[in-house]
Amino acid sequence: MCGIAGRFNFDPECPIDRECLAAMTTTLAHRGPDSAGYYHADGVGLGHRRLSIIDLSTGDQPLSNEDGTVWVIFNGEIYNFATIRRELEASGHSFRTNTDTEVIVHAYEQWGDDCVTHFRGMFAFALYDDRRRRLLLVRDRLGIKPLIYSVLPTGIVFGSEIKALLEDPEVSRQWSADALDAYMTLQYVPSPRTIFRDIWKLPPGHLLVAEDGKVSIRPYWSLEFPGDGTPAREDDYLERLDELIDESVKMRLVSDVPLGAFLSGGIDSSAVVAAMVRQSDSPVLAMAVGFDEQAFDERPHARAVAAHLGINLHERLVKPQIIDLLPKIAWHFDEPFADSSAVPTYYVSKVARECVTVALSGDGGDECWAGYARHRVERWELAARQLLGKRFGRVAARVASWLPTEIKGTRSLRHLELDPSDACARKHAYGLFDEQFRSSLYTGDFTVAACGADPFVGFRRAYAACASPDLLDRALYVDLQTYLVDDILTKVDRMSMAVSLEARVPLLDHKLVEFVATVPASLKLRGGLNKYLLRRHLGRHVPPAVARRKKQGFAVPVSAWLRGPLAPLVDDLLLDNRLRDRGIFDAPRVTQLWNEHRSGRRDHGHRIWSLVMLELWFRQFVDGSRGSADKGLAA
Image (cartoon, rainbow, N blue to C red; front, side, top):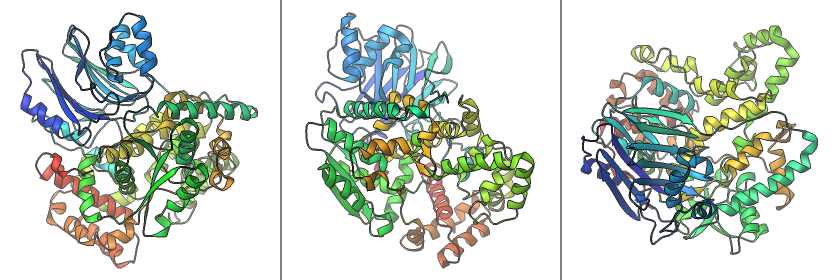
């Protein structure tokens, strides 16, 4: 795993600022602590930080073809590179390294932009074709690895993280009111925008081409949910699932450095670790963490799975230095990010890095197999719409509008008067800051600035793009296009890279995901049982109690931390004049929220957490100097 950064000027006579490129690349040192490399040409500069995984001795980047006319910098892994290499060698290409990086260069020579359709893995890369003076940026199909860019009047700047781009003085730090409103709604900034007005995320499954003074973006892959599966073929689907999980995990065991896995004892991580045991010739090592509070300790579940599978479990009871940790976490995310499970994700990555350089993760199982409560609610709302019809559905929604949202089922009743696409989108808001709450929190000026902002537009667009008539299929497609990319995968990438750990996600192998999309929704959510077919798969390899286990989120005691060790930090961040002077929030209302929470009268834990992470971001990326590597988390 690595970090990439670069600049491509439209005018070849406009030179690259080498000091600026070095600064951009240095901000990514946590992603690649082993070495740094650069390529400079007329109006082009590429920078690379390397975390050595494959071919430790000859795999430095940037890397070129034989005559130096094609150059690449690459972050990620191409798991089928050996197969592609043999095909390219048969076509006359010569290789001088054993890396997957060099496969990209020769595949581009052979197939042009279509080379990416041959790759199976997680990747973000920049390729410069000197003969055509052409830059190609590519992001993997599911968005496992990040790629950020900004189109300027003079050219294009890009990198693995926003902080790299901010080292270029031409890149604006002006933040977007629409993006901030989306963060308050969703707890993250949805793609393709970032919190910065002129900086963008390249969407998953897309490539960007800069050539002849023009920039174009187009998709090279799309996921299809056909909605025509046959539930009676359940056993056939199960056999194919077994094959694909084993194949996906086996491909991800290739490494020239120590490798292990995260293990929570839940369905997804247990399925991955069980497959590792079946596919590995050496003992499997897994890592688990827990907190003092029993409700947040997953180690007993991990121990049960480890004991049954006969693997080595490296576990740790974590006592986080949370007041020091939060500013560092904010630095790594580059933009406001309020998913508190970033804390345990960081710690399990840190524990893993003590033993290994690569860890397999179970992420993606919930989004593929209907693992969230909102997926069951989606089915309930469908049944309610069918039972009540439009007229009585609207009546039920109007009645529910008078009920407190704390009453279970109130939000679902309110959704009955919405279009199904809008109802699906709004399930991603968690209700922390709904429209009414945000209205009471925002100042008049910010309300005007964010007027017309629609944080759900991408969700509705994804819902409409899904071909399946099954509403659960559509909800899963929305998850895979939005929440998975912008929350789950962003969290795993940033927190693992914070400690220079490569995290691999076998449940998101694109061949496996394409298959899962063909599985009937009734084999994903059966009655009230989610992940039905995945549980059947897991039940072949672990005790029934593990396969039946209910979902336990990767959570932390946010409310208690805020009233306890984080209280002084909250006072400094939320009661300080700087927050008031930003003109975003009504200061007395923020003070009221904090006082209600601190006194125990109300639980505003996640709301306060969101405001804290936002203010930490402001102080580091707007008030302070440009991000610097010394704010990163040490391994």
